[in-house]
Every structure is written in structure tokens, then in C-alpha cells.
Amino acid sequence: MPGVNNGGTHLSGPVLIVGTGLLGASIGLGLKARGIDVVLTDISPSTQAVAEDIGAGRALNPVETFEPELVVIAAPPDVTADLSAKALTEYPNAVIVDIASVKASVLDHLTTVVDDTALGRYVGTHPMAGREKSGPVAASAELFTSMPWVVCASEHSTAVAIRTAEALAIDLGAVVARMSAEDHDQSVALISHLPQVLSSLVASRLQDSPPHALALAGNGLRDVTRIAASDPRLWVQILSANADRLVEILYGVREDLNRLIGTLENPTGAGSRLDMAQLISEGNVGQARIPGKHGTPPEAFARMTVLVDDVPGQIARLLTEIGDAGINLEDLRLEHSPGRQVGMAEISVVPGKRHDLLEFLTANGWKVVQ
Image (cartoon, rainbow, N blue to C red):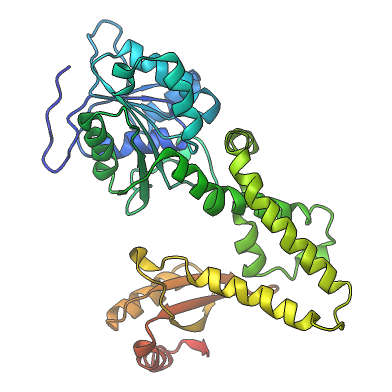
């Protein structure tokens, strides 16, 4: 089935997506929204059926001659390499990309089972997007919008294959980031896999916590443990595939924990308070290096908290009125007050707009906690 480039897209299609979980179905939805023919396949008929029902693509017609422009392997990490090798053989004219969260092990395996010519049509990629929920029911056509999409071309990848892989990311609204497979795996060990492990470890401390302690939980605990709700089956595969790189980082974390434990065992001892302050300060420095809005250097925003009645429409009203005032909202965080039917909306704006917003909200009857 020949594809037609639909104005504004880079891919022509058809595109075959192998695996219809959250990411695979989201890719399908995004490409379909741009008029690209998407064919789906999944080892689970029920999962594929759900993806088809939500409009992520269609099933392959057994009688059609199918020659995809691109095959996207959106399967679990432990089968990604084998499925990529199979696709390189079955579709000799197609570019094959995978979206697994580890890259070096997939490439290493492929170099042992396919020849250099076939390997030229393969490009490892990794969209840095996701949700705590899994499966096609959680899919979204906008999941990748403005998110980094890492493209790890190998020395074998052809220019056509690289352009096609990058076109996939661009068509889905992502921002292409190029790096080697090794650099990618080192990077995600630090910025993705380590946070997952630490979040899970903190959340595991809560298993037997008394209810009165958990009743005091606020956004701090929720922020730290949010990703602890991730799928254990998927993360066993991810951590196993990137274990060597993650272990090196965990050694450093262990040293810091041992140092802190030693300090806290004698908190009034000589140098103990300095050690504690240094630990927190080092965290300040690291946190300040995380890119801010749109990938720009982080910016200090002015914050204020607005009390919002816990009834339908109040948040919408607040945001609408802020927009009517011509003030750009940089960030918004919501928290509920225990035992009260009221929420707290923490609003962030550029410092120069803080006074104007405070006056506007107060004049419009909002209760502002400065």
C-alpha cells in the first residue's frame, strides 16, 4: 500500500507498530491524527483490539501486500532485540526502530544476528515520555509533544534510516536528541532508573506505616513516591538490562547514605551539622541544574497559594481569571487540606508579575496565602 505524505508530516507510511501498550498505542494515535496509515500487531489479541478500538491503527489485512515504510518495535525490553531482528528480515525495504528504554544491549545483540547491510536499516530510539498507567487505554496522541526523543544511530545506520527515525519523532511533536547508545544508557541510569529505584525504596517504607502518620502526608511525599506506582514487570526488565551502569551510581549513593547515617548517629558531634548542611546544599546545587521550562536554564518563580473550594468548576474559574488578567501561569500545584473541603493551589509566576496577580486575585475575592 503506497503512502502519501500528508501536508506537514515527514513520514509517508504505512507504519507497522509491533506492541500496542501505552507507548505503541500513543504512537499510533499520533500518526493516525496526521493521516498516516498505521497497522498494529501485538502478541495479545485483546490488547491489540483495545488499541484498534481507540483508533490507534488497524489490523493487517491478510490478503494485502504490505510493505511498510517504517516498523516501530514498541515491545518490552527483553524481547526488543529479537523482534527487531525479525522485522529486519521480514521487511527488507523498511526502516526498523525500537523505543526500548535501554539501547546498548539491543544493538549488541543485533550485531551478532544480522549482517551490516540489514543493520543499516536499524536505529535505536527512546522517547522520554510515559505515564504511571500502562496499556492502550492510557494512550494519548499528545504524549510525546515537546518531550525529548533520543535517537541513537549506530555506525551502521544509513542516512535514510536516521532521517526516518527522526521523522517519526518530529511528526509526533517530540524534540530529537542525538547520542550514542552508551551515552544514552549512562544518562537514563542517572535521570530515570535511579529515581525509580529511590522512589520505590521510599514508598516501600510506607507499607506498615500507621494511618495517623500517612494522614500527615503532603506534596513532598507525593512528589518523591509518584513514580513508585510504576509497573514492576517492566522495571525488572529495564533494571536488569542497565544494571552495570546503575550499580556504579548506587555505589555513590550508598557512600552518601553511610556518611549521613554516621553523622546522624552523633548529630551533636564535631562537624555533624556542617555535614548535614553540606548534604542538603549539594542537593540544592544538583536540583538547580535540572533544565527549566522548554529546556531553558531554571528560573526562580514567585509563588503564592490560593485557597479553592473543593467544588466543581473552581479550578477552571481560577485559571480563566488569571488568563483574563493577562498573566502567564508558569506552574501550578494542587494539594488538599486534610479534613476540610478546600484545596490549595500553589501558583508560580515570573517575579515581576507577583504583585499584579496578588492584587487581581484579592480584588476578585480569592483568599491568597502569601
